[in-house]
Length: 206
Image (tube, rainbow, N blue to C red):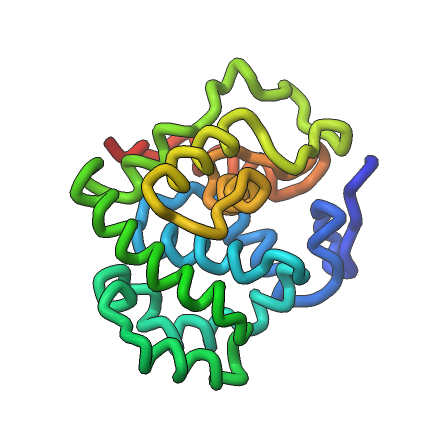
């Protein structure tokens, strides 16, 4: 089927998973599985910002370095980072040393604390933007892939209104795909049904 590749392990996957074992594992075990943990949601939003202009596999290979550098993306801890931490991170060869994105991550941690106070949790706020199932294609194929959606544009707008940065509609759409707000595994991908099952039993945070 279009957009599907069959690995040497016999598994049919979305084309982007390729043959890299790390990427395959991410595709099979993480991408599209619904997430309600604030720390992991915050991490993914930040890493999507760092990924802008780069391949996701580049970030994935550095993910453990990012976690070490940013206190495992503990929101309160990152919000307390100082100018000295910015300099430390700019000189950390294990991550993407982009000063603007580093500063943005710290800023976004502070904005995330505000949002937790406002909505109860980051998860509760983000899951408000899950698309209505009726608006989704019954069969998801290559032609249905798009860089942004009405929902990602709306979430991006609300985050930016609250002072977040590096959260444009395309970045937010990639985040929503990864965190399971949509199931964009292609028809014919062996993982699609498992993700759909996870989403069916997932308790949406309120």
